[in-house]
Length: 317
Image (cartoon, rainbow, N blue to C red):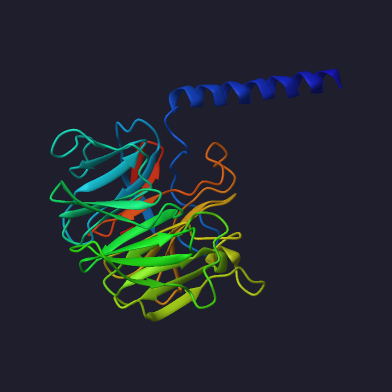
């Protein structure tokens, strides 16, 4: 029995030493990137093309690409936003922009000439890198997501459970959308994304995605609620997912889920499961339940934020 105790202690010390060595050598990483290992019969269809670090002062909180133009990339961290040439860490046009409060979300226009930076209750709009105007939702607002499509800015407000539309040229509010059954949002993750069809908005507490026209009419929607009859892997896990969404050039939707087994998946425009990008069950202990910010570019790549680094996924050929 004494020998067994000694063996157990030695094994435990070896594990601790390994963790300490890994932490020392990977202090900037929140997780180890591995090839996706989905449960059978799902086949891995995405792989890491490359990883590049940034000089962000803290973990990146938002990332954005133009929908149709080649680059640039915008990232938000701490109190600043940097606009980078693709694949570099050098800000375009000089130093990063700094703000008196932390930016929460970012969005580019389709051509990349307009950048919107979202804060708690307002959005600042920059045209060709110059500050153009600021739109506000009022002091009690809690902005979670923004998107730009066809000259309009779309903003989700957690406090009022609504999607608000602004005309970018005038800065005037021109419409709002409230789910007829109510937006159920237990926590301030209220994502929105533009696509070639319209605007996708998430109703996270109902595990529902809604596609809206430019006039804020519902075109279609789909739910992926975990049920007893389907493999829960295909659905959205937990009380309120997905936390982030983005769209690919072909109209597919990329989702990022929070929870004990955070994962990134791709769905077809009709809501059917398409593929797994990344899942790390049981290994995301340092990052807790925090979801990973994501963005897509016009080449069909998926960009996943990992602390101050960005991992780029491409489809498996």
